[in-house]
Length: 298
Image 1 (cartoon, rainbow, N blue to C red):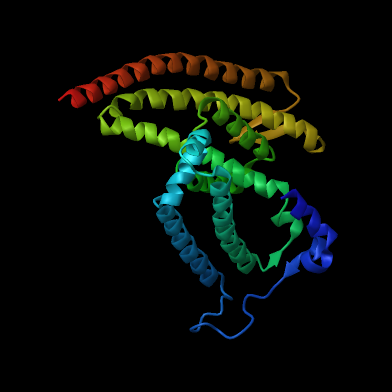
Image 2 (tube, rainbow, N blue to C red):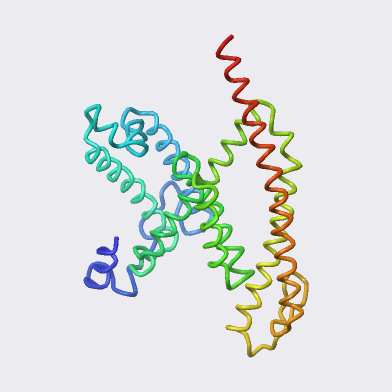
């Protein structure tokens, strides 16, 4: 990827240099009266391709090659022991991934009518795809879809609300790596398992308590982050900062003390709820294992 990004600037005759390559999606004769000029026509074109490609990828996961790809991902050494060439299997996966990525790139060219090397093949674009794949859950088919939707909403909404949205996104990624490496999809699957055995309803009060206390801690931390960014970037506009309808003074000790107090209070309450939740979760898991063993015995 870095080689392609460098080539985009080294060969401006082919890649268009820093200005990129522009196109005109309404060029040529209409297709059954469709010119792809209006944005709604492009939207439906992309939506159809998206659903068709998603269905094709899901069907591919059920093929022998798709199943062996999962095996190579989970345990490549064992796959080699049963006689498969893991390098060749990964090469096939790379080709198939490139095929679907090419479709996405073609649709992006139709949508934006421009392709620039600095934006399309840079490390930030590649890192963004890896980020939402990991956040959603790389071991589940619907995981990257969830991650992509959440990342788009986060980039659109958070970027309008705060200049520190990349910091918040990085912190979310950090906590997911530490406490939920399976991604959001793994959390959903664990709760679906609880719902299957009728144990999910008893955890709702604990979930609400964890969410409420975590929200308090996040508000305190966000207030401190916003005041820090205000002092660094908007000091010329004065010390007053509008934060969720409240006015904070970035240079006031009282505002910092209040934000820190909210943060510590939220963390303390969250820890108490977390300990109770861990005990409840362990008891429920034991009950589920007992039901499974009893069903196997019967």
